[in-house]
Image 1 (cartoon, rainbow, N blue to C red):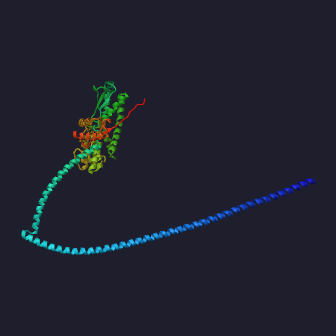
Image 2: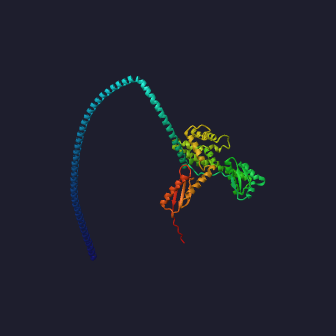
Image 3: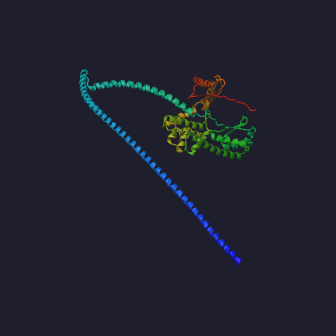
Amino acid sequence: MPQELLLMSAAIVALVAGAAIGYYYKRYQIQKELGQVEEQAQNILKAARSSAQDTELQAKDEALKIRDRAEADAARWRTELAREEERLLKRREALDQRLEKLEQREGTLNKRQSTLDRRTSELEKAYADQHAELQRIAGMTQDEAKRTLVAGVEQEARGDMARAIRQVEDEARAEGDRRARELIAMAIQRVASEHVADISVSRVPLPSDDMKGRIIGRAGRNIRAFEQVAGVDVVVDDTPDAVTISCFDPVRREVARRSLAKLVQDGRIHPAHIEKVVADTRKEVDRAMVEEGEAASLEANVPGLNPEIIKMLGRLKFRTSYGQEQLSHAVETSKLAAVISAEMGANIEVCKAGGLLHDLGKAMDHEMEGPHAALGAEFARRRGVSPAVVNCIASHHQEVPQESVEAIIVEVADAISGARPGARRESVEDFFKRVRMLEEIANSFEGVEESYALQAGREIRVIIRPEKIDDLAAARLSRDVAKKIEENMQYPGQIKVTVIRETRAIEFAK
């Protein structure tokens, strides 16, 4: 028992001694760390003081520099101000000197003016004396002499004026003719479309002659039903593999042509189906007329037309005059009128609309009596077209008086479009001769491989053999061809000659 107490006492003493030792060791460590922190703080304070001193020195140096620059700038400004003041003083002295010279000149001028006045009075007195002496010698008063002189001068002036007026009239007439030819030629060159228009075809091809019997039907019931529904005459003659449709109304003829083509393609040909196909085709043609009218209005740049006018305009797509399609003719007339009016300073919008609608009556002249110009003008007037455009439509064949220069321009554009070479069937042959002659002239030169007349005969493209003609010779050839065309042909406007020299290298991969 006493040993256990001793052991416990020894353990307690050891624990107390260990705790005391740990406490003092920990305290020693803390004091050591505090010393290090204080030392770091002292170092930081020293560094901050040193940096502050450096910054203060730099700031003082910068302030000194700024003060030096400011003093230098002030000195420079003072110098410039002194120079400017010196210049102003010199200018003031120069102005004073000029003012003195002006005053001296003014005095001299005043002296001269007084001398001039005195001489003028002397001359007036001498003139009066001389005038009185002339009257005494001539035996005529001043008024009588004046009337005699004016009569002589007037007679002479009238003669000179008559000669001048005659000369000006001759020159103006010649210049007007020349300018008119240039204007018309330029308008045709800028606007002319394809010379030969398509002609409405009233012939329907058949796959075989056996189809003719099916079209006629038993006892002719099919062909009678078709003619009655479509309002046309169907001619079944000896022409192989084709039938002909005849009707004075181009729209009905177009409906019949399309309907018969559909029936032939479908193969079902009997009265009930004929009525259905013709009704559907009539709607299709109505839509096509509206589309063609809108396209023509857009191409001619004439917006805002009444829908009925657009549809009636589209009917001209199926109307021809001497082989010329009337809708294309109307668009071309509108463009020609626009070009001419722009050159002459007229109203372009009125000319465009008048040119586009001038033949509107041709779409209805088979239904109503009267000239097509009057029919078209009345139809347009009732649909809100302006009076200026209506007069252009009504007067383009001079059936009513022309009220404006725009009406005259539309008439001229209509004549140009209808009478230019190749526009109608009567002049197609001459047009083809001119085009062939162009190509023959180009092909007559040595080294030419082939040539093509383009743009309705307004351009000729010549393709040459590169091994025979070099670049310089090609340039000479274009001039020679143009010169020969000028010497051997007559044509409006100008013809462009393009010589093409092309080298090609060809090889085959095997």
